[in-house]
Length: 343
Image (tube, rainbow, N blue to C red; front, side, top):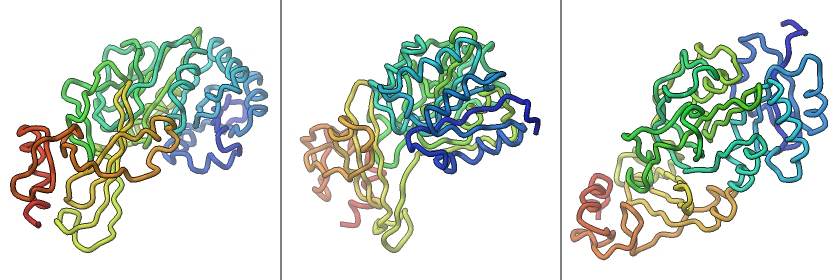
């Protein structure tokens, strides 16, 4: 490895120590090593400032968490903005979307003169946008579509949107129904735009799917074709606390999820085995996204099992679950059938 090759800075300020990098996505680190790309771990703002002023400057900066979005670090972010305008590349990803508050995110992007805002938060299938500016990134070896749970962005110009939902995309969840909320095809999970002479990118994937790692490397201008694309499905957390398979009516597998439509309130939910899911608005999660996943919602006995709205109808057989109408009762039957017959 040539010591004269400009490094990629891996910035992780939230934990306040370079060791936080040890939890980084292995494939991203493997990609940097495979490209014989030197890296520098940056764990403090002083280290960031000194590394930005080297000659030659860093090849790129990858921001791994939301530390720089803190209002108290505006002056340090301005130095990063200037680095970008002078021709540098900055990409925010990995754990950034897991910790940033929407107002902080908007203020952070404004420093790059970008109008991007926090959008919806749920898993869906994103498709590669062929209308994106081909002068900013090579789409070679990037997959046509893949499933990811993302804090997507609104107000991103089509030329800056790398992956967007399509008209066939829908909510993908083990807890919430597909039509729980609409999918806005104008939102984007990955954005990449020219800022001055440089480039600025964002990835909202909170689980770092393999194809997101490929996009990270592509935005950094590094090879990524060696990473295989993976067809992924609905994300879930499953904990087996009882006998039987997850498909058995008596199974105790636990599925949890939290989703949010742009401009709406966060909802969290849980499903145990094949029992009907329970979900409800989570005001505490709306107030602080850092508490996401911190508790199981209380069931709402008068809520529709398919959409969560007030439900005047109930299952005529078990009389245990309710629906807002016949359409949602029919839609939910595949989930409710085993539970209903077991009673």
